[in-house]
Amino acid sequence: MGLIWAVVGALCAIAFLYVVVMMIREQFASNLLDALLAVIEVGLIVQLVAGLAKLSDAPADLSKPTWIGYLIGSLVILPVAWVWSQAERSRSGLGVLLVGLAVVPFLFLRLHQVWTTGG
Amino acid sequence: MGLLNRNFGRILVFVYGVLALSATGRASVQLATKFHKAPGPYLLSGFAAIVYILATWALGTSRKATAVVVVTIEFFGVLIVGATHSGSVPLDKQTVWTDFGSGYGYVPLLLPFVVIWWLWFNSDRRGSRQARPPEHTAAD
Image (cartoon, rainbow over all chains, first blue to last red; front, side, top):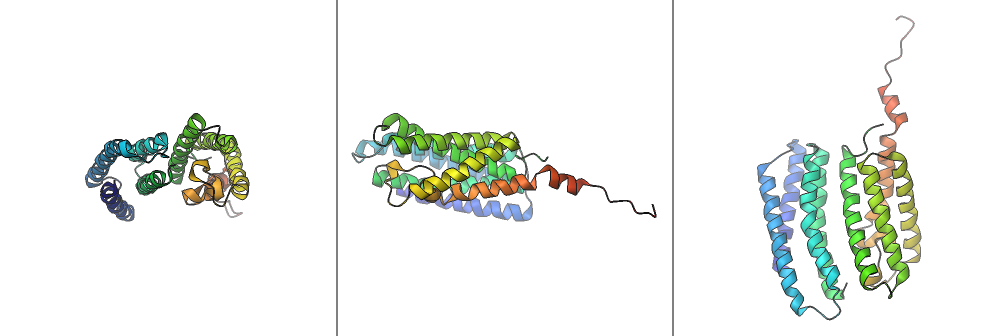
């Protein structure tokens, strides 16, 4: 999971910076950003599969529903942010994407916390 | 009155939506799988989840009065729970509001202030003051 978190987290950081640049330039749509978000989402699907596979050697005190909940939760954040941002092509719309891109790495930390402390 | 879900409000609705999702997920797991371990904190988690769902709905549908009430409840909830439920609380007994929302970067503590500012920014009084036409002078 560590590699997936590192790669997807780095992609989130790149996308975050790209959105900031878009905000400064008042550019409210970008195919490149959409592609980047799609790649991140694929990474999150890989995380879901890897996370479910990892359950076979889970610590005894792990709360499996919490673990699965965070895996699924991290999967829905960006699609919801994207849809919500599309309804308003403005800096605020991009701001929604910024929040979504900040939340995903935060959920990685929570997943790590849940795995190590049992959740 | 301006629409609460436009401009900056769009970000607020999303942030509340994320908190609603998070609090609901946490409360559902706690209430469904280990309610007997700590009924108090888990019921509190459920209450926080309802508050965030209502706040998301109120802001998302521009219901100002409801938003004021819900956000006020949220603010006092964070303060009371933060003051009484802090320190080294185990992860599985924490709520969104534990330790003033430190597990969520203190966002639950800060959000009510941001929302009140946003509601004031969108208030009728302010809006009518901005929309008022220039006053005529005697020379007119």
